Image 1 (cartoon, one colour):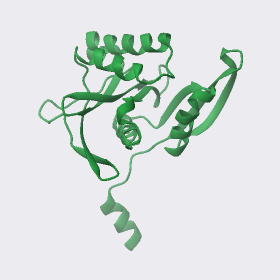
Image 2 (cartoon, helix red, strand yellow):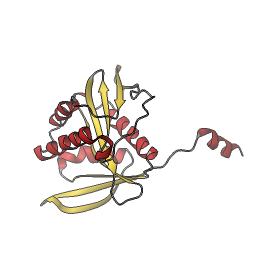
Image 3 (cartoon, one colour):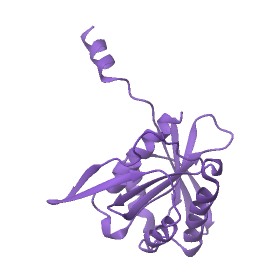
Image 4 (cartoon, one colour):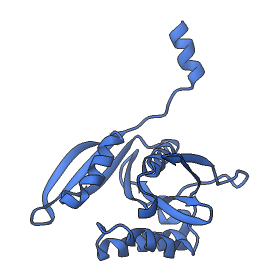
Length: 198
């Protein structure tokens, strides 16, 4: 997967607020893996019982690849923290041999912080980064098993359309469901206003 490029002169941490009831949750974002993230990513995966041991192993391998090779790994990460605690992350990258298509490989929020809207907020930030990288389509692959219904509903809620179903792809009765979303860079508000007035 591709990497996320950062401006060394800019602060990689951006503050935002999400709320559950009346309890504010302050979060920050960064796009570089550090060695201590490996254990935190393992913890996030472990709190989500849908992920199989094989899937958990792959998640760690991708993070290790990014840690070792950086930009050359082809893997992009966006990580969410509360204070110094990593509570979620996404991993994505440009699809080889395509001009502007990207795969979202992973998106996961620690179970203790689910239901706060952090997943949707994280995905929107990923989409913005992909646009800046020249992408205009994002693909997501997931399982058809009932345990993944919440994930599929989440993707639909975020504007992803079911593009294809590959029957029995993972195993008999377990199809691969492929979602896609076309994204594009927003025009400046000033331009939109001028066009409306004119």
